[in-house]
Every structure is written in C-alpha cells, then in structure tokens.
Length: 390
Image (cartoon, rainbow, N blue to C red; front, side):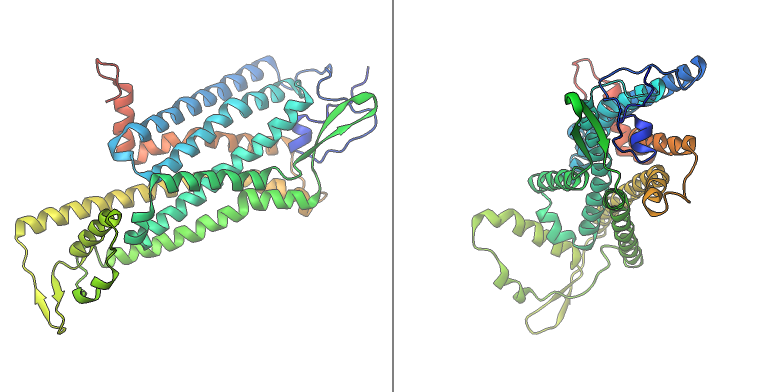
C-alpha cells in the first residue's frame, strides 16, 4: 500500500516545506495511518480545543451584542471591535475544527478544494486581526492628537469604510500566491503551499512583523501624548483665543450647523477662563464654583474613560503579539536559515495552537479590564422579563 502522505496535511503545509513529487496522493484520497496520539491524549486534546472554540464563539458574540446594544459602547470607533470579534468567530468556526481534525487524525482527510480555501482563510483571518489592531491604534492616536478635527470625521460611515479597507488590505497580503492547485496525471488535484523563500518572508512581514512595528510606534506616540496631557490636564489650558479671527472660517451652509456647535462648545471649554478682545487685552471670565466643578468632573470622567479604554486596547495588542510572535518568528526562520535554524516539530505545533488561543482571549480581556463591557455582559446574561437585553 502506498503510504505517501497527502500534500495538504497541516504538518506538511505549516511545519515544513512541501513540494509536488511523483506518486503524491491528492487530499481527497484516503490514506491509512495510525493516530498520532493515544486515545487518552486524543480525548484530552479534543476536549480542550472544543472548549476553546466554544469560549471564542460565545465570548465574541457577547462582544458584538454589547457594542451594538450598550449605550456606553455605541461609539463609532467600537465597530472595529465588532469586526475583530467577527474575524475571531470565523476562525473558531471555519479554521480550528479542521485543524483539530487534521491534528488528531495525522493527515488531511478533506478535499483538495477545501484545502485551498482553508489555507487562504486561515492566513486571511490572522492577518485581518492584526490589521484591525493597527487600525484601532491609529484611531486612538488620531482621537488623542486631533480630538476636535478628527472627532467630527469619526462617523459610523467612515469607520465602516475603514473596516472594508482593513479587510481588503488583509486579502491583498494573504491571497497572492499562497497556494496553487496543480493538475497531475489522471486529472488528480494536489494542494500545495507556496514554500518559496520570498513568499515566506512576504507573508510573515506583511501579516505580522510590519503591522506589529506600526502598532508599537503608534502606541509609543500615544503614551507620549497621554503623558503630556497628564502634566497639563484638560481644562487648564489658558491660552487666549482671538474671537475676531474665527469669523472668517464660519461655514455658510446650514448643514454645517452641528459641526459649528461642536467646535464652539469645544472652544468654550478650552478657553473658558480668558477671552482676547480685538485690541489684544485679556478679560477674565469668572465661573461659578458649582458649574465649574460639574464641568471639570465631567471632563475628568471622559478623560479617565479614554485612558482606561486605551489601556485595554494596549493589553489586547500585547496579548496578540505574545500569542503569535513565536509562530511567525519560527516560521520565518524557514526562509532565513532552513537547515541550521530548524526547531522540534512538537514545539512548532505548540506555537501554532497558542496563536489560535488568542481568538478566545479578547472577550476575557474586555471583561477583566473594562467596566463598560462588564456591565454590558451582565445585562446580556440577565435579560429582563420582556426578553430584551436591556
């Protein structure tokens, strides 16, 4: 009996370079192999991964419901979290079950066509996760560095357009020659991973290392801005503003009314203590202690909420990097030094599954570090008698 392995086995596709050789069997033909694990180990592994899949699906569904229904989480920027949660759900439903079956059986038991789709989606979802995190980091940076101008532009429509761009960028990075479907003698199809050195470097850099560097640089800048704001808190900016200089920039169209109001309110809050007259003299504006205390408390609460959520997103990004860095680093070594930098196959498999575990961690992070999500999750779990979430 021919014991030549199927070319699209996960171990062959992800853990070592593969090539089409004479006599190779297509994925849709069965092969007889002994299971790679003992029955006890197989049961334990299957239960663990199944539990991880369920936590991923349920947890990320809760995230989507919380963002779409909770008033405190309905900001347009949180649509990024909805899309990120959707990507994690797709990993748990379309990728992990087949990876689990392949791991436990020791070979790829599905069709070569699904092998092609499976590999493409696997890379796509992983890439989209980190590109989402990059977009979130850039969104936080712009909201902190340009709160007035960016705040008026941060609409649900534009955030949705940004999410579409995120998925398109992920597809551009993921789909180019990831694999080929070759026709062999007799019309047999064999699934083959593109194992050329240039593609390994292209995929690892585009799918992980480049976005990772962008995230780190952006968050360093966010930290610098936050530190500066800590030294000069909101509400203590006393620079004068010349009222006469603002009249020329006033829009004439009625549809800009909301933007004008937003800008005026922001300027009023920022420069409430001094007004510059046309002659250049400064007039002090006294504010009642009650009104001043209320507005200061409100601004302080908003700033604290922004800081907390920025910290939560930093934790999400850090956990993502910790989970996926070992896999991408060792995978890239195959292109840099394939002969001298090889690592044990069991260790590589461990890194591979640790990366998948990241999909179930985001809801846990939100629950631990963000009270808005905690309240939203409690309301989802404790629905009222009318059957609604709130």
